[in-house]
Length: 225
Image 1 (cartoon, rainbow, N blue to C red):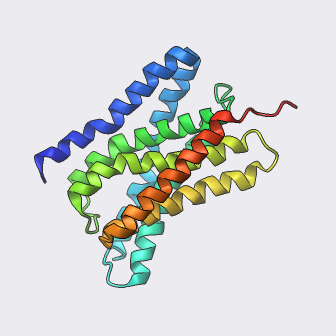
Image 2 (cartoon, rainbow, N blue to C red):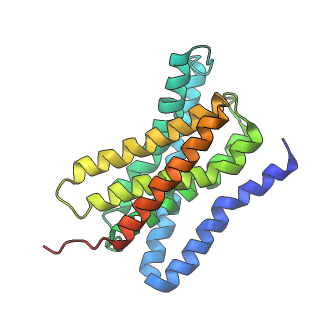
């Protein structure tokens, strides 16, 4: 492991602290409290991914000798398990809070949940205590892990957060979960296959999508009953 990779351990907590103090000044202590709860929810959500990876290892599914296993590992073991772990507490505990009173706040809390997830997930990835890792470009993964997960958080936060304010909340909620899981899975797929052209296209396309969703959430006001 290259010493420079240890720098990446600071990415998630530093971004979380910056958001906490900046947005806390703007929205107040109640908003800060929910941000802390979101961060802790992300840490707890990591347990789903941990269980999925351990089960995958025990069942021999980390032996990526076929395309089917590679797709299962990328989109289910890592993609869906990661995003479902973040989703449960975020959707059912964080989103109902009164402080989440704008669609953009849904994205904010989703990002804080993801930052909590990343704060613990990245050191565990480096340590690999249960020997559950498939082959990754190690240094590249540690540097892009946090930015990529923030993008997935925007996708989930946009749809789940928007769903709080519209009648079709169920479909929006599922779109947020499965959209984020798909993006996460595709990200893992490009890394495991080391298809860097596809990774570059994915990075560009997802950045554009996330930017559009962020702007849309920022300018959308919830409809009054």
